Length: 256
Image (cartoon, rainbow, N blue to C red; front, side, top):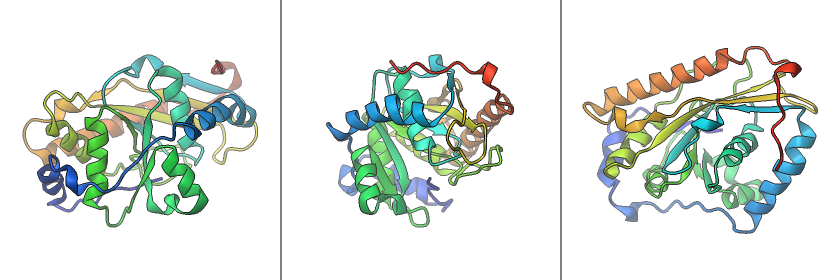
């Protein structure tokens, strides 16, 4: 869905410098007070249960109920954008989830829905400081932010190299406020077939949270590399647990 931002050596310094300057952020995102509840109800009770066979969610206990969170799922299908909030909202009372998506997905009618359901665009080739700053602001406001760390969709079941931006953004946001307490939740999504169709089974596994504050001391560049590596390791461990999906192992997620 998105691949954000480049490894330019001054990018992190620029974000950190502007972290306290709210005037640079012209990017906005919001959740429609009427569209989001309707979309959630239709998706949760009609669309997803009708399309998929069994939807298993494990690791719900790892989702915090308060504080800023980055949900970091693997990316296997465009259905992921619906299944991530399905899993998160099922386990959290907080429904104000925001998505960082590629600018190409924020055009036309689709773009209207994306923006009103909490999405905001980023140009993966030339990410604007205002967009990155908006991501930091959302975390400062203790929102839940969804970022697909692999960038694109991969259907081979393997965890592909993660983009460095998620770690840099998280560390920058953590540094912007004392004791902000950002947590990154590794999430693995796996389908019973590479191209989901009617009756496909889904397994969503949520790993224990990674505390960004543990990567805030010392060299920012090295901390970002270490955080990226630890996130990749967590996703790989989850993926290995899901190498085989069979019907007997599934417990369908209740729709209530």
